[in-house]
Image (cartoon, rainbow, N blue to C red; front, side, top):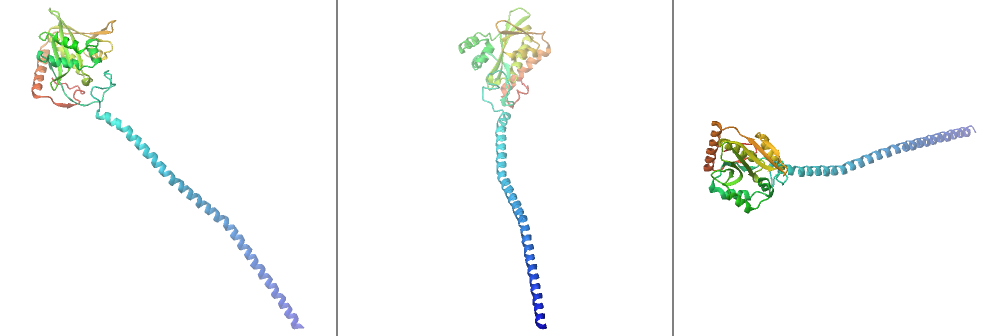
Length: 306
């Protein structure tokens, strides 16, 4: 009996110990499950973070080509804007059209390659060259020169009426062609004389100071011919005439018929004025014999030779 009771007690103890181990294993399993459940949200958060990083990287990669396209467009627009500026710096202008194309002396692209003209006296044998020069004037330039639109036939009759031994005609000659001209016609026969002057410049040679230079030469010639006063008639819209009159001390009077008269009072000739005229004519003769010299922008800088 005693042995049976001992066996019962051992069995009971074994069952109790088995129950405790089973309970411990169950507790371990529940703890492991809780740990796994806790780790799952962390893994999900990590996966979400990586997914957001990947999407951000994709967006940046998609944005980079767009930025490249915008930079390419900007560079193309800059090149297109730089092309006309390069043309203007190179001085590309259509022949016979300068400034605004209306012959009003607007801003021009300078300098351009031109041959420096020879300013000299025009003689009777060159009457035909002088006529061709006046016929090459545009309609607006003819109005400014003669006060009204004139035909080639009128210009022919005007050249035929010139008294080449009393009137003084000077011109700016390039390659044997007259490109600008000035004429000084004495008024009266008694001393002190008075004179009438007129200047014409072809459109392709305008804007280089040729009109001012020719007026200066005519005033010097008139002074050496004992002229006390020289008149120049022009239209009101001829603003260049105002500038020339102001430059050489002329007095401008406006009339009702839209004409303007510039009056230049001259002093007596001196040895310096006589020498100046003689030297300029001698240099012009020498340059005519030697030939022209191509100069870039020489006229724009005001360096007029004889």
